[in-house]
Structures are given as C-alpha cells and as structure tokens.
Image (tube, each protein chain N blue to C red):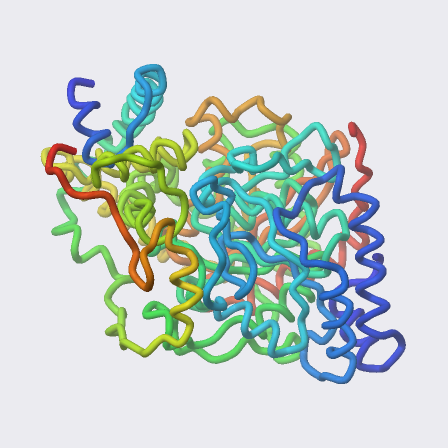
Length: 475
Length: 95
C-alpha cells in the first residue's frame, strides 16, 4: 500500500474507495510479506475483518478505515494479550484499553496484535517467547524493540498505523531501525489504562506510522484525559497543524556523541543539524551533563517497578500455573517456567535495588540522579525550543548478536531513555539510509509541547521527501 | 554474590543451578555498571531527599471502585477453579 493513513482516511471520506477495498489491499500485503517479517502474534480472522469493514463503510470518524496493529501488551477485548510471554500465552483480554476504544470510536479497525520483547523488556524483539520479528530493510537484522512487531508491520506496509508502548525507547528505537515515524507522548498525555504495566512511572502509549501527519492524526484521537488512568493529564487535545507556530530554535549536545556511536549515525546527525539551519531554525549547542548516567538510573528505577508490577504473575488469577503441592512452591515454579531470562534478570535486579541494605545506595540514589537529568533538560529548554539527537547509537544489528549481552543491548536505548526519565515528548523521524539501513533522528520537546515536536519533524520530513521503501533483502 | 539465593527467594523465582549461575553473572555485571553513579556523590548531597524528586507521582488521583460486568471472562482466565472460585494449593509455610 503506497497510501498514507491520512490519504486513506481522506479517500474513504470522499468515497474514492471503500474500507473493504483498503482492507483487501493490506491483506494482500500480509499474504506476501508476513511470513518473512513475522510481525504479528495474532491476526484476526479475515471473514471477521471483512464483515467489520462493511460496517465501517457507513461510519464516519477521524480514522475511518484505518487498519491498526496493536502491540500485544495493550488489551483488545476478545483477543489474547500475551505480552510476548509464555506466562500469558492463553490470556484473553477481559476489557478494552482506552486507546483502543478511542481508535475504534473514530472508525479504525484492529487488524491484530504485534510481536514484542517479553513484557516489553528488550531492544530487538528477540526476547519474545513466540517468534523473532525481522527488519523489513534487511531480514537478517532485528527490527528493534520492544515494539518491534508494530514497527516492522508499519514498515512492511502490513497496516496503516500501529500502537506501541515506550518505557525507555520502545517506540522510537524500533521506529528508527525500521524507517518509520515513532512518537512517544509526554507522560500523562495518553491513557495507560489497558496497558500491561512495565514501569508505571515511565510507560507511555504512542503511535508508529509512515508519516508525521499520520502520527499527528493518531495523537489527535488517542490523547486526552481518562479517569481510568490516575496519571492521565487534563490537557487539551492536540491542535491541528495549521494552528501551530513553527519552532524557532533547536539545541544539540555534541558531548553525547563520545559514547560508542557509529560513524554513519554521527554523520547523519550533523546533516540533520544543517537541515534545521536550512529550514530557518536556529541551532545551538547545549549541555546535558547528567544524561550519560541515564542508563544506570533507568535500569535501577525501571527494574524496581518491574519487580513490583510483575509480582501479579503468580499462577493464581491468570496465566500459566505449574503443578506443585505447596502454594509458595507453585508460585516460584510458575515464575521460573513462565518468564524468560531477560524478565528474570530485571525482576532480580529490581528486587536487589529495593532490598534492605541496598535501597539507599541504589534506588534512592537513582531517584536523585533522575532529578538531575530532569534539571538538565529544564535548563536546556530555557535556551531552546527543542532538542535534536540521534534516536539510536548504532544501525540495526544482526539477529542473535547482542541478545546474550545485557549491557550491550541496554545501550541501544542510550539516547531514548533520558526522555522517559524526564517524562518528555519525543519523535523518531526516518532521516537517511546507511548501508541500506534506516537511521532515525530524535526531536525532543518540553512537557506537553507535542505540537512543536511534530511541527519540526513535519518540516524536516518535507525536505527529506520520499523515504526509501524496505527491500526485504536477506530472506 | 553471597545472597543470590536469597534474592531468588525474595523474587519468588525457581531456576535450575545452571540458570542461577548465568543469572548471577549477568546481574553482577549490570550492578558493577551502576557504580558509575558514585561519581555524583557530591552533587547528590545537595539534593535533600528522594521523595521530593518524584514530581510525576504528585498528581495521582484516588482510585474509584466500579462494579464490573464481565466476571465470567475473568473467571475463564483462572488457571484452576472450582465453580465460581479460583483454587490454589495449600500454604504449608515451607516455601
């Protein structure tokens, strides 16, 4: 499908084609490429989708005819929510996530659920208990993660929009690897109700799409106050593009490029700075001295929340249960058998950071450094409207090359993690290709400055013109 | 790590001795990496307390309990049940 989401919606509204015709086009793409990419854990039955598309034909809405792939940690009532884990392989969602409800209310159709790193712990989607998703630009490489299935589905043209979740970069990093747009909203801007919690103080739901306009459209539907999420914010809806004033200045931090960054990424980053200047946006060096500690802070705070949030998977109310004669043995055996290695690592790290004797030295210290990172951003935003940095330090890596080295894998989120720690909005924009692989640029804004971030990305996207389509090489 | 067995117990995770060894190595490696936060000792003294840093949580609203209509679907997700109730093995206290 060559059409963008915005073009599809407009075409349906103007009766140039029907939702059923659009669906059939996407089903053909799925038939041709899903076997290679393996983006979906669950695809809804065709007859059900076609019947629903007929009903949508008479409906109106901002997303009429949108075909949405949903990350498998968001509840779609009636479908499984596995979180990519053996623990939940048969779990049937009993209610709808608010974001899904909002998409459906505007005429979107849910195609299925996408693959992900187990419980969203990972940066390659290799930690899924079910399958390895491949990067559509090179099938021997990972799509990034943890929303790798969603990013690959958009990139391969298997859906017109996808939802992901981003705790430390899980929307932006796979978006960069797969050459698509990935948007992480301000913490609180989009409801988390119906999202299986990873680290509740950092998690945000956001869209992955082919274009900035499509992400903008999706954001205008999914954001807004939700009484079901106690951290949801009562801010106004996202404004349309014509009401937005273009950003005047963008900051960049050259110090960040000292930490093991691919040369191709550095080169693209400096090209992006030049592009901003060409667009009339003033560029300025800023300093974010504590960002280099972001990785340590994140893995202490996020895993601490993990150890608490994943305590609910105990074999009692849902999910896997291992047969044991004793209650506590049953819980320990179930968790031992149901969780993969990375999940166990993170639960143990979090348990360690919160345990007596270590809490002060680890958890509490990390909370304080998180505050220093927030202040760094605050100081930078006193000088500039936006910040620019690469989304990832490397190009997409080969399947299996980093999955056994936790620290190496964690470093894939070097540039995305600080944004979550500060609760800021950010976008990853497909910027260029190197060795046939996509490079993403990240634009970060102040709290609730989604429109400014989107505007800068839209201006840059216009200059980049058409981003090359994936080639599915290496299959 | 002396207390790794205790950590597994606190986390309620049972693993084989081989997996335990691998996990212990992984975790020691990551914990060593966390030590870089010690470089900030002086700066951190200037920050008064951890609670004050947690600004995001300050706007949490109270939960409001609501009746739930879909109990049947919830029960269908019970791993083991008896009638309307979920069942569990007995608590022996020796876990």
